[in-house]
Length: 102
Image: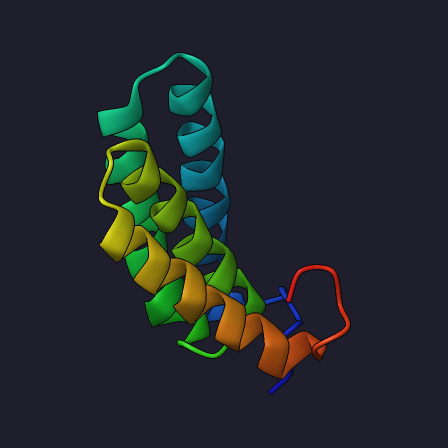
């Protein structure tokens, strides 16, 4: 199992496509200033990413980071910080301390 590999077995390809589509919706809602909808889509994406990729995967860390961003937008700074730290820990384990995404 490669935690950086985004490819999925055949039986999980539809879930992977849904994760990608949810990411597109997050960006679309964000661009339209629809932050509540963006947060909801980001949370759905995170939940699905955890099911498909597990907690220790780059995609899941990206999704955690997205949810943290919206928590910050809504002024939920403690929750945002907790999620940013969670994403950062996974990224450091997967990518190393010197990687720019760590």
